Length: 439
Image 1 (cartoon, rainbow, N blue to C red):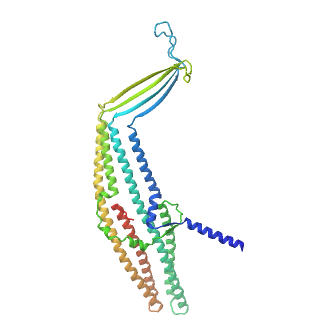
Image 2 (spheres, rainbow, N blue to C red):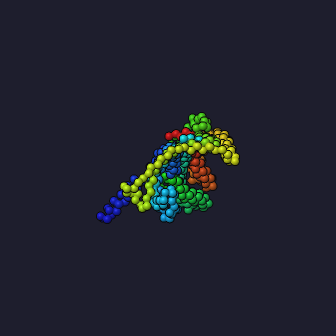
Image 3 (tube, rainbow, N blue to C red):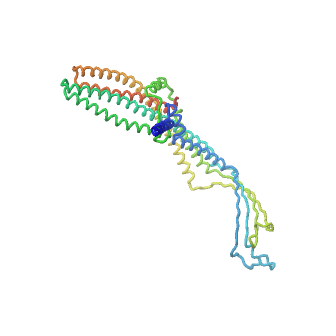
């Protein structure tokens, strides 16, 4: 008895632990979670951080640069031996060992490419931020689709299990009637065929249900095997996503993230033209250096007795491009051609986006209309199937007619579920292309 109580306590503890590990989400909670934890979102955020660091890297390249150096030389074989350089009778062999400790300060005074680089760094940061925004929009839409697919599979499983229970009851009742000689064997066989087909559909839907959960986990940024509990249902989400005002939304293409990215591309190509042109401008750099030089016959540079001689210098370098055999001209022309391509791409993007918005509105409106139509068809199919059930068991209807009515009902059920999902998904698609996701 004691062992049994211990085992039951263990099962209860495991059950509580597993419930604590279940992730529960409404659709909006799932979207919010994915926008923080999805791997693509995290990488997009890292790209923005990289762009920020690159911007500072570009800025810093034009600020003062200080470097130090220590040079040590040991003349194992001296270049001159026993030569009287001064003519005073003293033979100068030169110092066998020498060391130089110095520092150099460099500063850009004028460089056209640096100015363009500063502008390009800002554009690159903007490109990264736009890419992050696009990723967020795509992940939001992906979560809506994945969440809806899970709900669709769950609703399908519930409906199919209910249909199987009804069909099994029909088969059992018809079999008894057949055994009493009041029904043909074909009627039993017809119902068994229908039951077999629905059971096969159940097995496939169960597999799809598992895949749907795994896909949602991946989209959320969770482990693929994480247990989930979705607290929204398909019908309530469909009602929430019926927004006819969205069909009248302004078709401002400039709000679309793809248009913003195309503009970024055009601006970056303009900067490349400026960069090539700046290469024809002179550059001016200044420097300041200082050093201490020590010479000795032995390595005594770390002692106080070592004599050091200081030197310092200041200067500037003006570099003036004169002739490049047409290389700079060709580079500039190439950059201009790429700019023209980006301008054409911007116009093309604008036209395509107008078409996408119109198509997305049309698809959303169709989804709303199809929802009403499929809902009515389902009600009709349920009534037809119920009538054929009564007629069959009263002996005035055939098993073939009942099977037809049941098949029609099952198709109407799946079409209605798909219609609800289409409303949700098409609204998410329209919000994405309009760049106005709603909570």
